[in-house]
Structure formats: C-alpha cells, structure tokens
Amino acid sequence: MNYNLKVLEKSDISSLTNLFNSLFLTKKKINFFLWQSYNYYLDDFIILGAFYKKNLIGSFGLQKKYDKKIKNAYMAHWPAVHTKYQSIGIFNRLVSHVLDIKEIDFIYNFFPIKTFDSIQKIMDLKSKIIDEFQIGIDFYDCYFSPINFKLSKNFNQIYTHNSIKKKNRSFYYNRAYRKWRYKEHPIYDYSIFRVSNNEFIIFKVFNDINTYIDIMEISVDLKKMKKNKNIIIAFLNFIKTKYNKSVINLWSIENIYFNEMLLSLGFKKINSKHVFGYRFFNDNKIKLEWIVQKNDSQKF
Image (tube, rainbow, N blue to C red; front, top):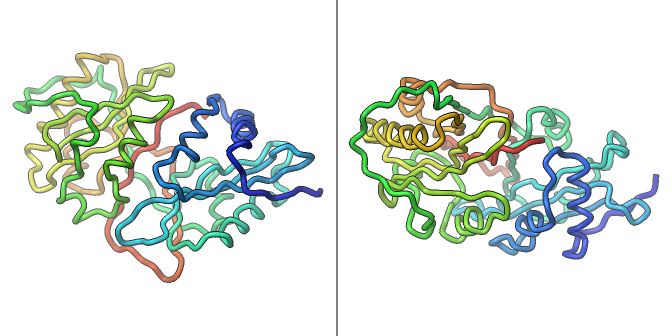
C-alpha cells in the first residue's frame, strides 16, 4: 500500500477533524482542533499525517509544554489511524518520523487504557497509574465548613501553591497556559472555586447520562491538612446545593494524607480509564512525584 507522509498545514484541519470524528463517539468541530494546534499558546507543535489517495488516514503529533527544568518536553498528540487501515504499520511509521524530526527530552500523554498497550510498544513508554477518585454527591452528607470562597473566572489571579510545586513534579501552569486551557476552550466552560490566590479548585460541569463535575486542578497548602479538609467540604457543600445528582471526578495530588482525607469524606478510589505514559530521552530523569491535570471527561 503506497501512502505519503506530510506535515499538516492549517488547510488540512478539516481532514483531521473528519478523521477523529470517524473514530470517536463525540463529534468535535474544526474550532476544537484549531484550538489544540494553530491557536495553541505556544508556537511549537507538529502534526504529521498519512495520506492515501489524497485522504488523511492517520496522524500523530507533538505539542510543546513549557517546563522550567526539561527543555524539550512534549505531549504526544493526535494519535489516530482510520479503522480501514489499522494494524499495517502506519502509526508506527508516523511515530518514528515525528520522533526523528523533533529534538525531545521528554514525551508523555494520558492515554486511554483500552488503547495503551499498542501505543506503549510503538513509543517505548513507561507507565504510571493515575490516582482517580470519585464521589456521588447525592450520597454525601453535608458537614459544616468555616471556609469562605468566591466563584471566579479570573485565571490571571491564581497560582499553584509552593508546597505542591516543591514536593510534586508538574508542568508550569502559568497565566498564558491557563488562559488558553480554560478561557479559550471552544467546548467547555470552567470556573474557579477560589479560597485565596493559591488555594483553589478549577472545575467544569459535563453532562452525559449523569452530570459529572471534573476537578481539573487543586491547589492547597499541603502543610495545612485540616484547612484543606474544610476547603474540600465547602466545595462539596456548594456542589450538593447546585448539582444535587452529580458525580465528582478528580485525579488527585500524590500525597498520602490528602488522599486519606478524601476517603474520609466519602470519596472512592476507582480504576482510572487513563494511564500516564511517558518516556525520557538523553538520560533525563525527574525524581519528584507527578501531579497531573485531569483530562476532560467525554464520550469515546
């Protein structure tokens, strides 16, 4: 089978949209893929496409992540092969070409568990289980919390607490990133449950058969676990009042005391539908625990 590889241009975005919409239950519009690529807050990204008879049948790319310690950190992105052309080596060839094009120190993504085995072999990835927690808010009994909070959409005002950044490894969620990620997202609407500028919860509402509350980011002072418990209680009370039948999902901070606190409030640890896949290049290593930002819940 003769097919050609080509770096996608902006004029190819409609073909990329059609490819992904043929594979997933949730159909997305062109503006979503433009947001991921040409409207990304950093200019450094690449999408390589496989074309057969002028039709896009596969894709794979990289999206730059700003990091203070890892110079060339990238998120593996846009992995897709049309169902008619799977299992004949197209994705393997796409990955090999992209990794040759870019200078890379670290690559990662949060891959669906169902497809991770094949991607892991092709990309030579290591894996890490994601700590995912869930609570059905209608089963939660409200507790008193003395915490005062405000709902906000001012993402320029907040910054991650130093106690988290010192103990956990994360990418640099700066103002430019949060503006792109939350303010400019073409599908979802995000809000901040703000206690202070560095104590907050970023969340969104996702309606499927049930109403889901995705907690995207949590920032707290890990040295003040009693206050953190009151912050979580205040958030649960707020959600119970406004979205009584909802289910809350989060990928938690890797902190044993924080996670024990979640369990004490009725959260259950569940089997995550995603796995953190990663690979270091050039002998780079990071020893700190990872703090991950939750993927948006959606239909696949």
